[in-house]
Image (tube, rainbow, N blue to C red; front, top):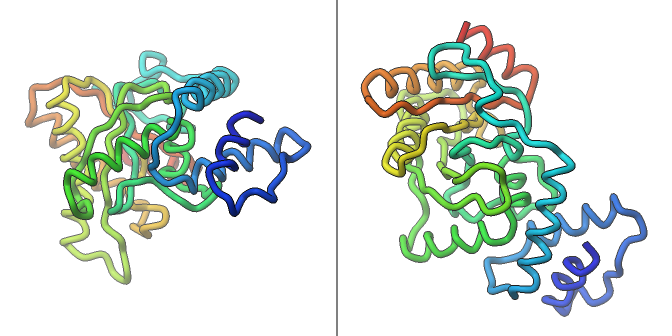
Length: 251
């Protein structure tokens, strides 16, 4: 951890007055902050080796849940409450912003921040390459696939949900449904068999939780009915409120 912090501090002259904290908790917070604000710039192999080892140790400490351990609520559909960065599915879904580079706010509580933190700096580098090729912001309702790096899943599906300002429109509903369809289409195209969805757009983007859950469940059920590809869908929730909503709607 000391090596990683020093490396990241040495990348910027304006950080030269920052010293290593004394406590482990303060070091962890500083390291996460430095990783969160780091732009998608080249990094040394030595840094990646140490970072990957550090993140693997953290993952082992935090524990992993595998899809095989879950019990379906409906055929092919699951509900799981927990930290999506600890779920070993074929893919997890990241509620991204239109720049698709992750959250740059130090230690922010959004899922975008958590996924990039525990994947490692390689994820932002891959996202930056994809966005450079695209030469423009990511449209709402589409999806992109990347590697997962130090996460226990195999891939991350990044999608931009609608931002709600005022009443939810029919267009907002359709765009949210597009997020779920785009992720499932992309997963099928890459031969994936399990996808864990977060509650897209319900946090910082202010989509009403229950309406979002209804759209998510109906869209996933419709997709599974119309497609022969047997993708297992996991609805991942973190808050008790969302667990109650999904549990009631699914059962």
